[in-house]
Image (tube, rainbow, N blue to C red; front, top):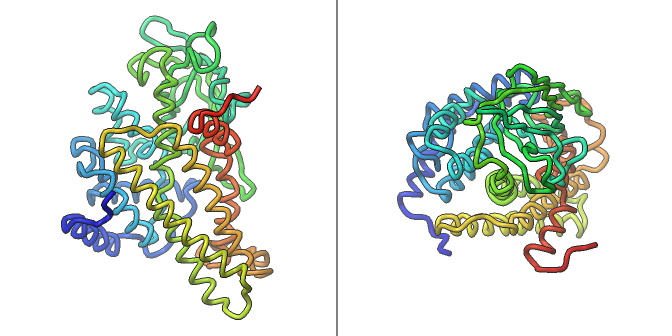
Amino acid sequence: MDLTFTPEQDAFRAEIRQWLEANVPKEKLPSLDTKEGFALHRAWERTLHDGGWAMVNWPVEYGGRGFGVVDWLIFEEEYWRAGAPLRVNQNGIFLLGPSLMHFGTPEQKARFLPPMATSEEVWAQGWSEPGAGSDMAAIRSTARLEGDEYVINGQKIWSSRAVFADWLFGLFRSDPNEKRHKGLTFILVPLNAPGVTVRPIAQLDGETGFAEVFFDDVRVPVNQRLGGHNEGWSVFLNTAGVERGLFLRSPARFQETAKRLAALYGLKSGGEGPRSRDDVVQTWMDAEAFCLNTFWTASQLAAGQTIGSESSCTKVFWSELDIAAHEAALRLLGSQAYLLGDGDPSKEGQSWLDGFLFSVAGPIYAGTNEIQRDIIAERVLGMPRAR
């Protein structure tokens, strides 16, 4: 793998940097898990699209620039360096989008990808259920096929972005006689459809990043099915592989965290010990290792390969890296980290504390790390299944 950037890629980076410096909001936007913040983040997505930066690696006809995955990684490096807002439609553009490219019909791509790129339509993720968290094969929500429609009943929970989103993608059991991963269908559901009820879930900070969604005889046309009938598991594996292995957490996010941690260490000189130095160095090395691994994954995709079960290794790595980096920062801050309380995320100490509280969810979302280690043991290492 050659990590030398071409002159064209260097020019691309310079173009990105110039545009971001001119357009990134000077003031940090309110949390996207609030009504006001969600609206402002959606407006920012439109600004990104109008500038030609919504998804640089998508085909031009769907709102992208037609560049490769490596170009997207360059964009991410500059995006995080500029401190730009979080992507409110990440469930759509980073997770569903690639699966639509792979499994979608020409009509589905033309219908769903352009408004996804502009965030005119924002997507929620409908994976977990009360009885099926990381074990997605245990899904019980049903999708009964009646003529040219599916009739959906059941419940999803911990649905990211569902409070303010427009659409939800999820797995539903379309053959009740099949068990586990068989008999599941991947369906796109409008959240304003009759029979859909969205109930916000308040987090500890009072914000609503999640919701539970109830389906009561919700009718969805067959042309909103992604992939074949009873063949949703293969679509899910594609989406989950992208989520865990490449698009959900770009390496630039953790490289910027490592830079901030090193700067914090410099400010706290005199109060640190050998462990603090080791923490900073380890975080920096791990962030760089994750970056190299991601570029390797991108090169594999460019060569026509797919992301398989090894994406579980990546997910475990970045989620534990995030926790370790923020724990190191809190140790450097000492008691100051717990005496802030004013909730202003623009302040360095509060930002680290907020980041830590979010990081501890990393080993849970996108599939718990316990489940990921089972996948690694069985499908990557070839170890026998535990009984």
